[in-house]
Length: 292
Image (tube, rainbow, N blue to C red; front, side, top):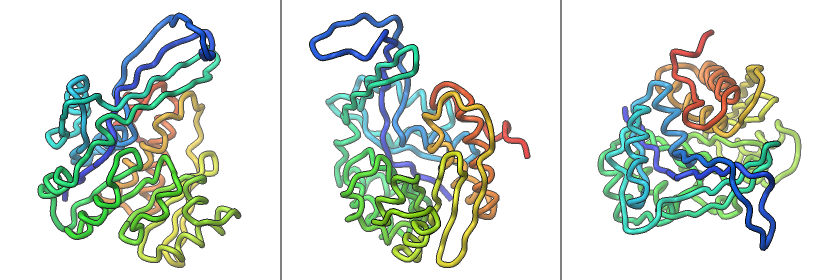
């Protein structure tokens, strides 16, 4: 059983600044760092560190060829990443000493995926394999339909959320992993967590719904079945890859044979380790670090 993570891959350029630059102002940065990033790539790394066999598919420019090697160092298979004559997706991030930030995003290759590339990529997978998606690449509805035609299992994290997601063929999704904002947007109601989860399970009766609730833990619903796991307490210093870690460990645990609640507990534990460290990919723990 194979996992395809079809998603974003970015170059994150982080600049340390005395304050967020104002219109017409030029300021000096005290330090700069280049990282591999993107929700899709982070989720691929989380899956690999959790022990799963995962292929990342996406698109980069010549400026991002080093990203393939970077993903390989974490155990992610990169041969399905396409390249083109254009820029790789970028996040230009200003960070102040008191942790304020400002971010400029460039979609780059993430928004240049073609229908032909989708068909070529999915040809390597078959019935029963898993597909992981978020909302940082183009043509996601087409990817969902093509994967379901192959009878793949689809796991969707609709982040960042936009109203257009409500028109996607979400009834074809097998596992939906959402935070509070995404759950409210998809349900179309404002209410308690239980009310929102009930609405989602009624709208998508054939889908496993997992709601991550930050300090309140995580909830699961499918039809009448409900599960809850509390947060694994820790001192948080950087929450950047918390959600991506949860998804990776949850799905990898399910595929390894763990029950839903056990998979949620493992995902919660892994996320608690991630937020206790600075960074994204490097902060995600390897499965050997989890202790129960």
